[in-house]
Image (cartoon, helix red, strand yellow):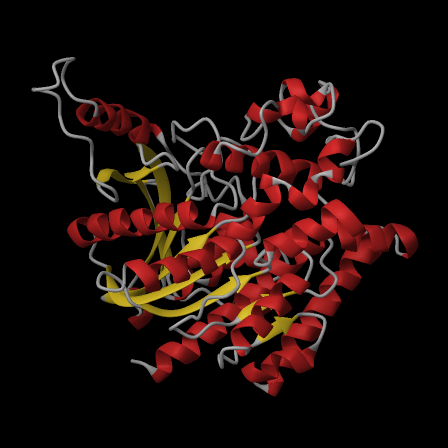
Length: 466
């Protein structure tokens, strides 16, 4: 199940040359490509991933019971497209497109589209189409594409073959633009070069950072692109929707979330590039020696272990060493946080105070040490304050999943509890087992169970709106 990218490299060079114009004379140069225009569309792998391969993968990960047997083989495609960066300059980005294939009823004709936003990664080479290298790509392939959904999964600016030297991390409006443009390009490609074509049904989901991006994308599409796309339903998962409250907790009262020393450089650089007023110099926010490299640290082709060894990140396995001696950020940053432009940026990108038009289902785990669960319940309460009563599933509580039916709720809650127990036992139980569960909670344990609930929600909405 190894993706082949030799064709991509050859075709990509040709596409870039044609997009750049033929010379230095402004009167003869080509016009910049339009947002969402397809620059390249190719097969990412010469053969579809078969149902048997997909089922073997979910069984090996112990999630076959909730993933269900694959109904379709999956063809993995790759598109390269034009979007824009926060300075309104044309930039290039890429997207994976997972297309169901086969003879079954779920695998042919016009299929619903899932626009999927991936979670945080520091790896500059990250590409959702390379399912042999990233678990999230293989997960959405198994849970959605293999069940009859076309999945469009943009890689965001700054990753894969994008030329941007940073990534637009947790910038709500900007992220939505990248998602919309990726969807446009993918639909153009599929409508011209695929027997399986996108229907008018548009579903939106994403996990962690992608949960925030998914919610922002629904908001922006319904506000700005309603004449072009109609959102059928959305299911954001474990996202930091209440960013300003999240920031307040991390930077004032605590606790600091697991992974903070990775997330803060991504976020600070993103907002500095977008707004230009987060700091005058990196030393305003970063301690030495980190100030010398933090602004350009991520995304990176180096491993986190390498960065720690090189002294570019604090040597802290929990990635929570933000403040104090040896911490990533200065004490002056912390003391000035409440009146800072950084907090204003968090407020700007907080996803409360808007009203969805399409139905929404939220999901997460109450004991998440990385994205605190209040983000999910705060979003639910905010929607409810304007009459939108949407479920917020807590994987720790079958009762919170009752909207999906008693059997499904019991299956998901029981399966999640069993997955935690297995993780603990494999680490030897006791304190080591508890630490293993906490370490795996956000990145490994929660995603498949929330994905199963999201898929069930989408199926119920589609059944009610054929």
